[in-house]
Image (cartoon, rainbow, N blue to C red; front, side, top):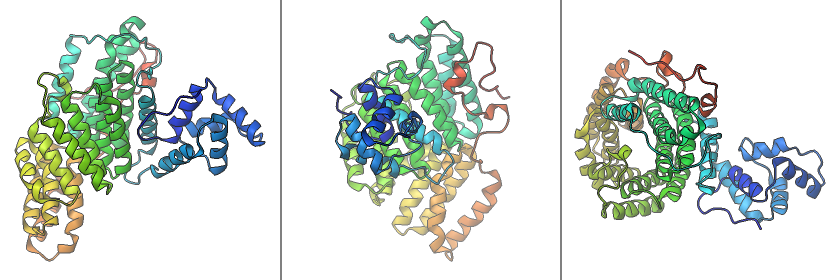
Length: 452
């Protein structure tokens, strides 16, 4: 008997793969069964592969026969197909293939959190090393507090390249002990690439991080990876994809996650829902995050979540409230967190300026936006410019006001000094290594070289 599909958001590709594997069938067997049932002899396993990889979505005819062959309700497949079509590649960036691949992998992880997603790695409890590698990784995380992705993305890719080469060159029995470091290195490389404006490179790194975290048996880190990817998609104008990833992350990690991680993932859900116009879902996620944050359990937070505290969570609430059109209660927490550093000030300053525009406070919005613009220059973070672009768009209806003219003049003067999105130039700006690179023979050229 075919087991029921897992709870949570469903995409057609991973759902078809799950139903096929539950019956013990190959893609060739599915194609043969479809040909026999439908009387159409021309369908091949390659088409089934395209469906599962979500390169194509089957039409109504094949969805009906898939339901018959796989013995599932037809509306289960049509609903999944509709969701998959609604998550088409967003126009904001050129990362449609990495995005589709990560969405499919996330669904596969949720369907079977114990699946080995990195081939060739034996499954046994992972043991974290205590050598110099993790220390340097922690130092790189701390650098991210001070320096933007435009300067650090190359170093993050280099650090990930070292982790990939260490895994590919070790004995099979030693690989489980290296998986956590690979997962954390890939998550951080993805975060730095996203901060540098390289969305496609960040999604590639997140996919590797998810594979490593899942194979290491760490659902909390896997959830954090998907939460980070959700934050990226929300920032590039893809709230639907962001919501799928955030809900998948929370569903897969909630049982093992620390209170801080649960609160963070609920905030990822709230922001994506608010940006996508799902006000009730956003409010429910904010209420749930507040209940989790009000019941802290000291000592349970993972080291990679050291930066998350009460003021940061309050600012995340303020950001979601602005997205929901409720700027008044968002003002105080957004103001408070802006003293933490230039990138934080730039990001939350953009949201605060957007809230002031909702209140009709154009002069205050321009003042805050001007400070945020200068902080973005200091931070070296293209991501920090995201909300300022939205603020500038909303200022278009106030062109004759003196405050708006002053802000536009400042923006023109600051333009040559603003960080540019995309991979950094030079060897350190190469795309983060993939697992395909990790499977090369020892000594093969992989990764990138350090700068400076």
